[in-house]
Image 1 (cartoon, rainbow, N blue to C red):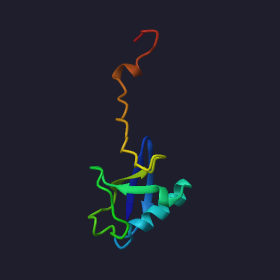
Image 2 (image 1 turned 180 degrees about the vertical axis):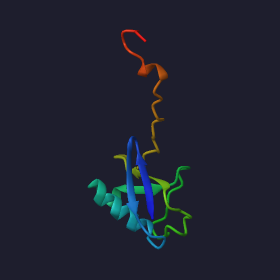
Image 3 (image 1 turned 120 degrees about the horizontal axis):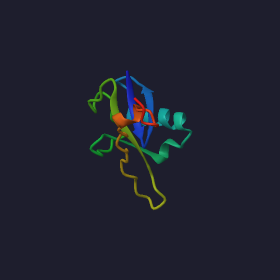
Image 4 (image 1 turned 90 degrees about the vertical axis):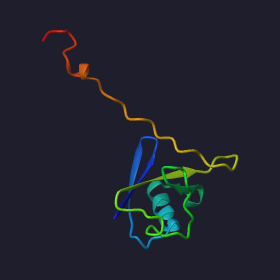
Length: 101
C-alpha cells in the first residue's frame, strides 16, 4: 500500500504495510527527503500528531491516505500544515492572444 505525504507543493509516495509503525514511516520519509527523521513529525489533515509506536493499521490509514510531515522549527515548536490551494486555470487561457477566433 502507499501513503501520500504532502508539504507545500510536494507529494511523496511512501510504500508501507499495515504493520509498519510511524517511526518506520518517518525513517523512510527522512531517507527520501534526505532529512533527519528526528526532525519530522507525522500528522493527519486535522493536525493530529501520530505516536511513533502506532501502526498504520491502528491509525486507520488506508491505501492512498494523505499524511503530513511537519518540521521542528528553531524555537522547538512544530510547523503548521501549509498546503496552498490548487491554482485554477481560467478558460480564457486557451484563447489566442491576438483575439482572432
